[in-house]
Image (cartoon, rainbow, N blue to C red; front, side):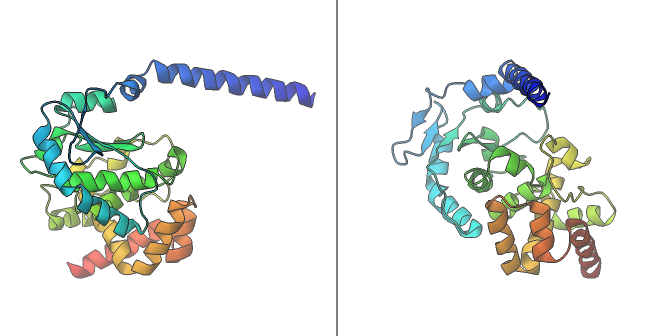
Length: 277
């Protein structure tokens, strides 16, 4: 009987895996991940950088800042990158969207992404609501890549979106372009803020994490909260960062090191904001 149940369970698992593979291969994500980059041109000065024809000026800016970007990311993360990687710079937002299976028509176009062990930069990084943010975008995505080199997809998905994005924004000095910090604080104190989740959801979405906020407002709020965690006790935060980069539980590590859960820490954060106001 046990053997029969095991065979049935194995057959069901095999069927589920096959169905998931079929769904993946017919999805736009499969097309995006398999899209060739053979037409990208290797930069003559920095062989890590590749750009599409027409994106030469974008590539020039990335090459000029890349060493400083890597240095800052490694400094704040506390460890060097473990594996070599490439930076791909797209010439059009349409091209970038095709590589990332992004069909969003948001007024705030995505500026970059860390994917498959490399970084893609979009033209919007060089003109985001009228600002050149390529330096911030590069550091932000390199911070994500740093985590990717240490954790698998499921481990990373267990990090709340507010932390993943807020910490990358802290590293890059990005997030909230066009939003004043004081405006974001007023939103938080009036109850218009992201949900400070204790753990991330493997099948969660970025849109749900926004909780009705605009992208820039969410990023600004997340960065403010992460900055508060770091400045409250930088040594504890460094220990926390090291442990979660080793794959330890986000919520359990947070409570163990900070002496309280995320929700309680958020309450303390709100109290601090009200005092400062």
